[in-house]
Length: 255
Length: 255
Ligand SMILES: NC(=O)c1ccc[n+]([C@@H]2O[C@H](COP(=O)([O-])OP(=O)(O)OC[C@H]3O[C@@H](n4cnc5c(N)ncnc54)[C@H](OP(=O)(O)O)[C@@H]3O)[C@@H](O)[C@H]2O)c1
Ligand SMILES: NC(=O)c1ccc[n+]([C@@H]2O[C@H](COP(=O)([O-])OP(=O)(O)OC[C@H]3O[C@@H](n4cnc5c(N)ncnc54)[C@H](OP(=O)(O)O)[C@@H]3O)[C@@H](O)[C@H]2O)c1
Image (cartoon, rainbow over all chains, first blue to last red; front, side, top):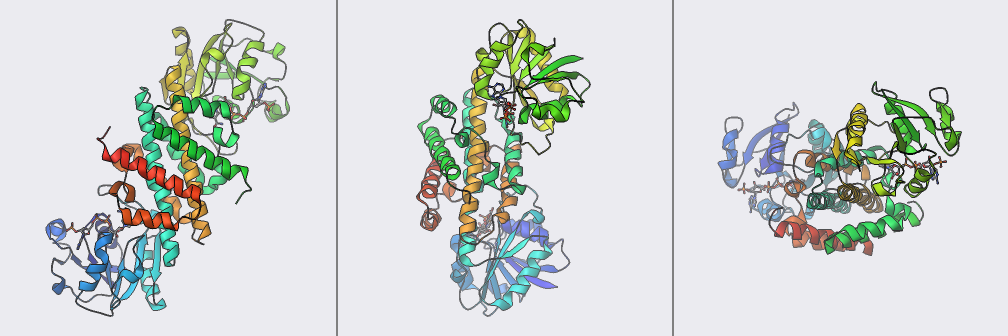
């Protein structure tokens, strides 16, 4: 049994706690947060604490706190030479205090407070400085049922950046579609099956192969009609830039 | 039983033919294409033809041909006063020859040749000029198991435009994520669960509520690190524009 202490009580920490509780390989033996209120609902299930001096000995400490507080929290930990990881896509592994064995368990997924999480759909990127720490982190990730991948810092940062495109930016395109449709009394709901299908299509087909539409066809009549229809300058700018991007991709040779 | 003649033998026509064949309410009594080769595999199932003069009498003629050929084909039809519709999101209903009763059945989905289509996931936008044609078109769409919505021309054009954002442009963001990850030896595959989850999230939550990430948080450190990481100017431009758009959306009041 691998013993784990979780530090932090936000979105990711809470989902991790619940998921570890269902495994037979990992035991969360303590849950720390700087304030106890968020931990109260769990105080019967696990030893909770808000004082770093009370931290118990464990195989692994997972810092699941805001990116900006990872470095400081890691240096405040009153022990050394233990395996300490964070869960951020963008914070360096060397930002953890060097008195620890350091690593990262970056879950490449978007977590919401309320929605249930199936870790089978949460790929976990594993990074370690010394090779010896890797097998334990791999076991921990696999115990959750997650696909895992060993990455270096550059790859993790790149995946985090790419995630901004496929998650935040894509979601903003949905938002714009929402604005456009509602302004005409059309229903955004009508687009929901298409949104899902677009995401499903690239599960087995490259985005290059999946592309269709007026930009790819260079259908100038439709493109101009669309630009005329758009009222907001920002929506026009995005339309033009992404149309150009599609044309650059499909004018050139395939990657 | 509603009798239908399909004209055109592309993606949409083929999926419609197969789906109608499974219903009890609609019978495809003839399938026309300007050339017969694509219809050959179906010649035992349905009367096929490549000559407009051979067209038989039917309750409904569905022109499922390229946008640019809809107007001309409709005017060449050797009859009048019959219900004739096209399936395009961007072509006007008045582009159909005025000798017909005119309408549109616009399936708001992306069709690929090979993938099976479940019409339960294909909302159909129905437009008619005279109200009398509506009930029959509604029956036809409902027979496929599709959600339906009566729309006017402006709404249909707007939905088609919004579909470009959530389908073509979103797919291009996937493509960029593909380029970014592969250039670092990271795996695009790792992003696939996140792509799906992002699409699923807005099935029950507005894109406004679903937004997260550095742009929304105005996390300048991460934004600058990302811009530095990006190699292609085009990727930087898209990053900047969509970041600004997210900030405009979330700086202002909620829609
Ligand atoms: N959310 C996601 O979708 C996601 C996905 C992948 C990775 N991550 C990473 O996972 C980590 C946690 O993210 P999250 O979304 O769970 O964050 P969150 O919900 O905002 O929770 C942040 C946690 O950090 C604690 N915290 C903040 N500042 C602190 C400080 N100075 N000292 C000690 N604790 C502090 C907070 O304590 P209080 O409860 O006292 O406020 C809270 O428990 C981050 O590194 C993030 O980049 C998040
Ligand atoms: N594909 C989609 O995802 C989608 C979604 C919603 C709506 N639509 C609309 O559905 C319609 C058909 O699209 P599609 O994707 O099925 O097209 P497609 O696969 O490209 O097939 C086009 C069909 O039109 C025929 N055609 C082209 N020019 C013609 C002409 N001058 N005279 C007669 N027939 C002609 C072609 O005949 P040949 O076989 O002889 O070449 C072919 O059968 C379009 O209005 C499109 O906007 C498409």
